[in-house]
Length: 344
Image (tube, rainbow, N blue to C red):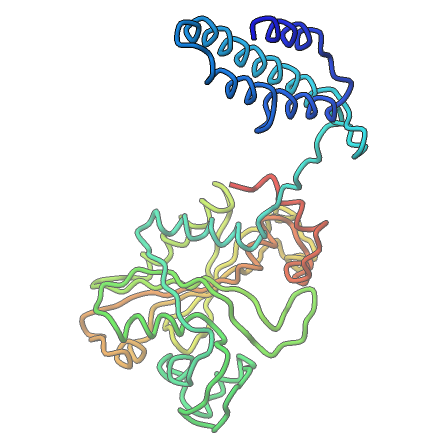
């Protein structure tokens, strides 16, 4: 057995495979389930007890030598040799994986949420298919009120009354559900998709995304609203961004206002985005109308509050200087790849 093992050791030391196939044949011959080492261990069983100690040590050393030789050759093969049958060149670099990117609307949505979370606002969500009460009536839109014409609605079920079912036109419906199902104080934002029957263009779409906010407590004032939104603008667009409030009208707030910021694209000098005024409107806001509070079971003599709402697309337009709203929903990979560096 010793002479036989010595012959195998000499053969192993001299072995140098030309390719991975020869190395695999080496493994099968010496280390396979029916290989030489397995056979030698079977022969070892018949060795006399006096010789087992000597031959056992030799046989184990031979096995360790063979395994070490195979591991060494395997590493060299993986790093430089070529498999003849498959034609695979293992020296070539591997194919890289394409890095994905987050959608710009998701990036802006998350940034808006983070800013308001730092102010103590929580996130609330609701259904996209709503009834007339939550989408209109509870928000001070009486039946046949002209204010309903402000929002062209996709109706699923139209009965000209409280039984109407529609795709929500704003996330204000989530505010109603929150006020109905809880007790003040409330401090929450409501991000989500909304739908309006509008012609698709560079400035409008039949679906878009909003973030609305609601804060109700005792002694909430319009100055609280202004300071909250001013802080939001400075956090999102940077310190020094100018802000102005203009009187406006919304059925569910009184007084109501629209908030403008200095155009981030032209820096106030005038461009298509700001219609050459230097200002861009980014959201509507106001004090919650007492009728809305009463509709939701909240004592308007004790509690006051403010609400605001903004379109995420408009915020993204100004943040990333994107002039065509349709780009957000076309899934053009060339467009989306521009936001790879913003992956968190």
